[in-house]
Amino acid sequence: MPEIAFDTETLGYIRLFEERTGARVKDCLEAEEKLIFLVEPGEIHKAVGPAGTVVERLKEMLKKEIQVVEYSDDPEKLAQNIFYAYEVKSVALAPKGKGRHATITVDPAWKARAIGKAGKNLKIARAILVRHSDIHSVSVA
Image: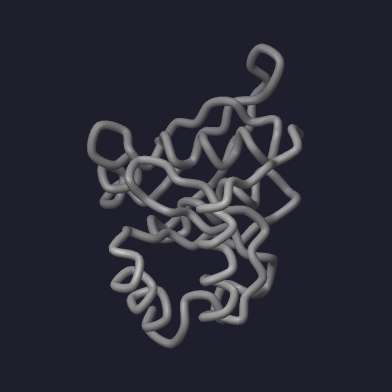
């Protein structure tokens, strides 16, 4: 895994997020006009707050869309966590080039949403997985 370095702006986002939520941030990245916070395992509920209230407040403060994902060392579990909102049925990993490809199978009713407009959610998933695993490509089935 490449070493992750944060710029001053990102460090500010992390500090604010940790102060407001009490959850520890493993990573923070900006992708597809969204701020994505990866929180330590077991801290997702703290980060989101009751009925998502904490995240909603942060969205208003930062005037940005925010996605919170629970980190996992297990690439399969991490991929599942990224697509958590879309009722993941399974994650299949297959060798591809120097890394692996993840196929995330979701409830068919959620497939279009899981992919996102112009593949937006796939791009976000790939950005996270490339930073934290050997997964280099992602598709939704």
